[in-house]
Length: 78
Image (cartoon, rainbow, N blue to C red; front, side, top):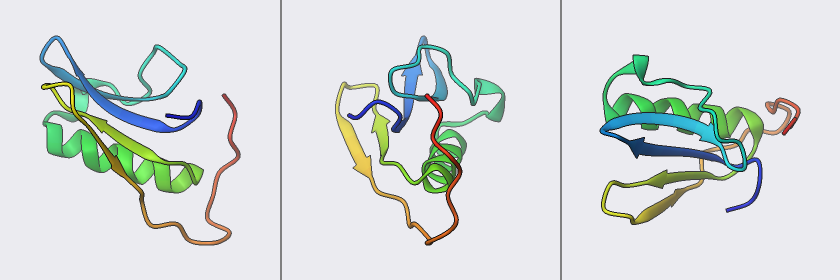
């Protein structure tokens, strides 16, 4: 995991999305389900042009590299 990547994780039964190296989530559990948070994280990683990680409840991690379109990236500010 590189600082600035996007990760979706489960904490206390609630799924959230944040930038690695930052403890506060930017996509709070108001989105609802695990699948919705994964979709949000994938979209955010694509916008920022960074890797995307899914940290599962069992401790396993899936690296999901989102599709990236040239010129379709937001500046990275971590």
